[in-house]
Image 1: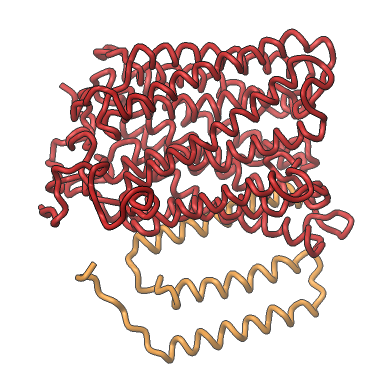
Image 2: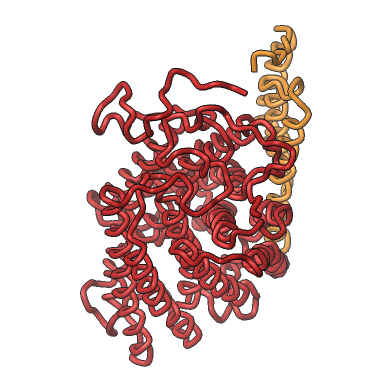
Length: 538
Length: 94
């Protein structure tokens, strides 16, 4: 066993006085927990910007014709909404916040393998976010291509594309560095006795995610560089007028961006796999199958990108291939859902706020997943491609999946992170209002898409009016729920009652350290004995 | 970490690899003068792959690393090949 260094273990990471004071004690801290919170606060700020843009879009669509903005402004708003939400919120999302905070503690380490690189990742993230925001505030108009930056429009539009493209490129570096750090941390720093098959499922999900971050992100990086070169020098890689191939852009973009969906969803699934056994007080059902399904999703997820391109002019052979591969990825995803439900079966279920969020995650994820099969099948995809149905499916999976899991995770780990408890009544009210609003906002999009309403238009025909009103009202209800949740958490972080070290009777290692944890987490590095495991409930 | 052995590679090997890399670079320029049709890109990629393999194996010490690291790098290369092959389901059948 290793013993601790001179760092006091009775002082929490929040109270510890290091070399710097005030703001500098945060922005120059290499402590994984502080970096996790830096990501949390940065992301929440950007998330609120994304929410305001989303609300503006929904307000525009409350009635046909122009309501509050012109068509070109609508294009800019959905582009910036998408870039912020995808590249700055859901991709870094759970790994950057909860991965940074919890991974070392859950595997019995004092920090990540490269703490300085970890801090650099956050700085790079902020630099990327700053660049994207400058593209909106300065230059010849906000980017208007959608978050996918599709060629040839992305290098032909007069909008201010270069800072946005460069920003996404820089954000990719943050992702790569975090992924690299996590892989090395899990390989080298697990507690003695914590074999791979004893590692908790959240770290496992981060492991699968980290490999995607490390291997797939450089592809989108170089693709974005090619778009920038196309814009500046007209090199002709994607420009059909110069012999280039715009479909090649779509291939390269989605070779990253589809696995990126699994960067978003795998850690979300990992967090749910921690919450369900804790609130069922039961060993997770099928631990090894869940591990294998995590790796299978990460692996198969590399080969399904073409389902975004069924109507782009790809060959028929490629269309069939990608459709079959898409159906394959549903199998490990479904295995996880069955395992979570089997874990709850005959468990001593303790219905608390994190469990509400986790259970509703399964519900919205199921709707998102099943609607994914509809757009993954060739024939139905051709009919539904680029309609509101796809927007509904996407938000059920990405916002439903990541958002619900994120809120489940923050309500689960909040007592550990801040050492205080939140007001559970307000937390539950916030969850209920948010969930009702979410369903009212996105469910009508399935109907609208099936009726033929295209996505990304600021206007629509009169027959789509009623469902759009419901969707807009849903956005207001959901925002009300969101405000309640955020205010409750912020207030409780400061003034909530002091939390116990293990308020939920969890069995993973983070519940063995004080709340909030000391700077180096453990007085003595824990050791796993032969029969120890992360989910050993009586 | 301190107990791990570091393999010392003679400078002669590094010099040979450097020469090979330079030779292959000139070869990748020279090959553009030959009309290979559909295999132009394949030829350029093959030469680039040989060069990057040499860098991986010798300059990045993969040859002297642990077996599991070699396996992991091998799996990544296989993944890359698989992604390229799947992409060609589009290009060769379009």
